[in-house]
Structure formats: C-alpha cells, structure tokens
Image (cartoon, rainbow over all chains, first blue to last red; front, top):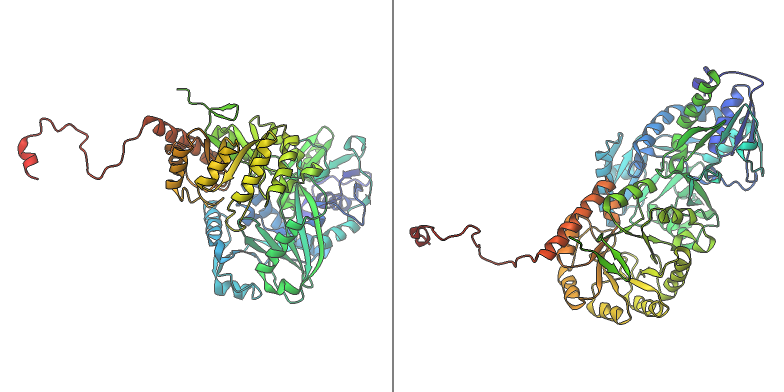
Length: 338
Length: 264
C-alpha cells in the first residue's frame, strides 16, 4: 500500500473507527495502521462465525468475464486493482494466481458460449482468446473431455480469501467482534462505514449467494473455470491443496439461512460437469452470504456528513477492492487537507 | 385511437408484460420497463425464501415501480407447490393475480399442463385470477377456459430460446377457437419481429424477459419491442390482405396499350 501511504497525513494520535470488518474494513484498517493510526473495527458477527461476503466468496478476480453483466466502471477499477494486488498479497503472504481463467459450456449450450464471445467482442474486453478443445485440455488437463471449446481470459485469477482475511486480521487494528454499531455513535477522527449488506443505507440491498467447498485430491485445476449454463451459471475456483470453491448462486433475497437443497444440487451438478474427478470429492462446507449492491450494482464511496460510506461491491469485491481503498483514502486525505 | 384491453377487471393500454429476471441491475430493469411502457411485471417468488421474507427489499422495489405485479410460480413442479406459493403471493402482494407456471421438463422447461389444470381449477374456485402458462395445446386451453381462467399464456417456444413462434398454426387456431379469452404469448420471443407476428395473429399481448434482459442494450430493445407490439396490433386491426400466388399490379392497368398485354 506504499503508493497511497506517501501522501496520506501521518499522525500517531489519529483514531480511525471502522464499522464492518469484512474485506474493505480490514484493508482500510491495514492502510491506516501502516500510517501509525490507532484503528478500531467493529464487527456484528462473531470471530468463529463470520457473515461477511468476503469470507464466503469464491474470490475470483474475474471482472473481464463479468463484463457481460457489469458496468465498464467495474472493469476499469479491476484493472487498477490488478496492479496493486500482487504487492499486497506478497506482503501479506496470501496464496493467489493471476494465470487467467477459462469460460466454457457444455456442447449442448454452445449457443451460450457464442453469445459470451459476441458480448466480449462488442464490449471490447481485452485479453480474450477463443480456445479449441486441444488448447483447452492443454491448459487444464482435468477438465471433462466433453468440453469442445472455451474462452481464455488472460487478466483473471483468484486469491485465497480466507488466508487474506486472516492475514489482515493481524495488521488491520483491533477488531471488536459481536459489536454491532451505528456510525453516528462513533467518534474517531476518521469514521468509515464498510458494513456491506449489514448497512442501514436504504439503497443497499443484499443479494444472496451460496457456495460449496470441496476437497478433491483427484482434481488438479489451476484456474477458475466458469461454466455457462442457461439456468445455473456457476464457476469453480481453485485453492491450495486441492481445495475448491464452487459458487455462487445469485438470488434477489436477503435471507441469511442455510444453503437450500436446490442450490446445493446446482452447485454439485456444476462440479460434476466441470470435472468427473469431483465425483469422489469431499464436501467440506456449504455457506451463504449477502452481497451488498446498489440499484445500479456499482460501488459507491461518499461522505455522509462526517462518515465515509463505502459499499456496494456486489459480485466483484475482490477484483476491485484495492482501487476502492485507494479512492476512499484519497477522499479522506482531501478532507484532511482542506 | 383508444385500443385498451382488459385482463380480468384491469384495463391496460400496453400489450407487453415484462419478466424481471436476469437483468444486469435493478436500475436497468427500471429503465427497460419505462422504455417498454409495460404495465404488468411478473416476478418469481419461490427461490426468494418467501416464508422468511428474504425477498422483501426486492419486492418493495418492484411495488415502487407502480406497475401491476403479477407474481408467478416459476420453479414449482406440481400443483400442490404452485397452490401453496399462490397463497404466499396473495399475502405478499395483496393480489389475486397469479401466473401459474409449473415445470414439467427440466431441460426445455415445458409446462406441465396436467398439473396446471389441477392447480387452475383449485385456485379459480378459491377466487384467484389465474394467468396460465401452458403449451399451445387447444384441448388444455379449452379446459383452462372452462375452469374460468380468462388469461391463457401459451408458449411461443421454450423459455429463453429466442426462437420465435415454433407453431404459428396452433396459435392461430387458439385465437380462432377462444375469441373471448385474453391470449398472451409467453416465452420464446427473441426479436421485435416475433412480437409483431404475435400481435398480427390477433393475440392480446406478449410476455418478454430474456430477449430484453440478456441483450446488449436492454433499454433500447425494450423500446423496439414496444414499437413492434404497436405495429403488430395496428396491422391486425387493419385487416391485412390475404396472401396470393400471382402478382397483382398496384397501379391501374386501364389505359395500358393493348399490345403490351398481347406479349404474354
């Protein structure tokens, strides 16, 4: 975070209070801790039962392929973020890979792949290469043989979200768990609201996502694989030691209950279609969380009186978080300077 | 020219119903709805965990669009599930309208017309106003009418395929045989020309979702669909000419020198 650090006011007396200890809260906490500030984070969930979207997310860095759904803004924020992540992740010792990702579809759904390529071209998304079966299997030999073509997206990758959150916990300041707060009650020199779907911003809605974690010693996939499907467009993201995250459903609901049978079936079917090696995988976890989103599904950073509100990272939190942190801290700096 | 129509007791000017799934964002849904002029919006409930109120925020946003909300039972596989969901929808949206959609086949999402008939009979008896998503089967549609269903929604093609009308002959038959029923083609539309074709057949309306939500510019496409619905409807009301096999000159032939016709 050195790029930001140089120009931010340093003060050992500075007290920074952050509501929400998800991805953004922790990254911002880390930033201000590095400045020498005293950082306090308040988190409604308990330490052993996290509820943040960041904890559950598959954490694929996949803004280019998300361009089918998302605004051009997301892609540009992701591009900035991609320059920052490697240094940050190295420093925090977090496993990650930026070796690209693959989008494919079952031959029955070839039309979806054609449509995907058409949209990528029309929206001029860079780093997109169409793959034949040979290239596909040479990149990822464990992909099931029924995939005849796919798309390689070179500017994509994944990171280990839980390793990142854990690592940030050591350096982001003091987190008070099980402490829901209202930002009006906070008195820090800098107060930042990063509560995600837990925010009381009336424009924020939660969009339910469900994931499945598998341990699959027989499967060796190194990149995120997105499977286009008319009903369940899902993906699998690798983690170290043959762990995989399958995600994520997208339901316009703020229900925070357990994963439903239907969603589990969709996720498991996706795994099975992507690689038959998943047959004997162990199911290690089924989780759900709410992605915070504004009506246009774009993030917002704004001053609400004395509180900086940063929210709405929706589907691409990990892909755009570094750029959001830079913009947020720049806003704080501007205000401190004036 | 006033060309309004009625679904049950509600008078509508627009001929389009819009589904609300698969849009890039709620903001774009709103723009597309405005561009389309649609007055009826349909939404699914089943996956939103209606019993826990998980979808409250989304449903509230829908209500705030000030259109008629037509809750649907997408995702149900039998009459019992659909009836239960209809009751929840009634409570949530304070409406007796229910679009019955009962899936009979997983891959083409063909409606299960057998279960549809069971659910329609029961819900009509309970005072619901059923909008029945069905195949183009005339016998099923007649039975739906006999149960008191006044809005029948045959598919044009399987949901999301964008293939247009696969069986125009059967749809034409439905129009002829069910003149007093509101007929709305639901599913399978891809292009404005498909919408125009539906309206030219004398159908009362068209329900659209994927063709708008998944295209590159939903707002523009919504407008195109709206124009097409108006074009098709006007064409229907205009009493189009019948096709014929030989050309008929549109300029009068009186005064054509006689030796020209002799050349034949």
